[in-house]
Amino acid sequence: MAISPWTAYEQHGWEQFSSTVRHELIHAWQYHKFGDADHGATFTRWTDALDTSQHCERFTTPKWWLICEDCGGRIPRYRRSKTVRNPEQYSCSNCSGSFRVEEGDGH
Image (tube, rainbow, N blue to C red):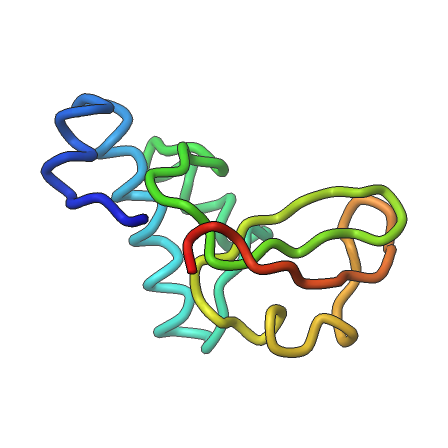
């Protein structure tokens, strides 16, 4: 279940909230510029410049989880991205294992 931006701000404080906004703005820019968004080299370059982290606190429940069949890694997904639609075309960045998709509680 999604919470309002104001509620997130009240619950997490300015530092965490503003860091998450900067984090998400980098993803928005990546998607606009490249048609895709990830946590790769371009993202890392901007996290340093904008004084934010590569990972941010989860403010809402994921709609899907990408689960690595080999190492069991779990990656939250909030929109029906290419990876959610076609998990067989992607592999785990930790171990190169195959993904399966599970619905989260955010449905």
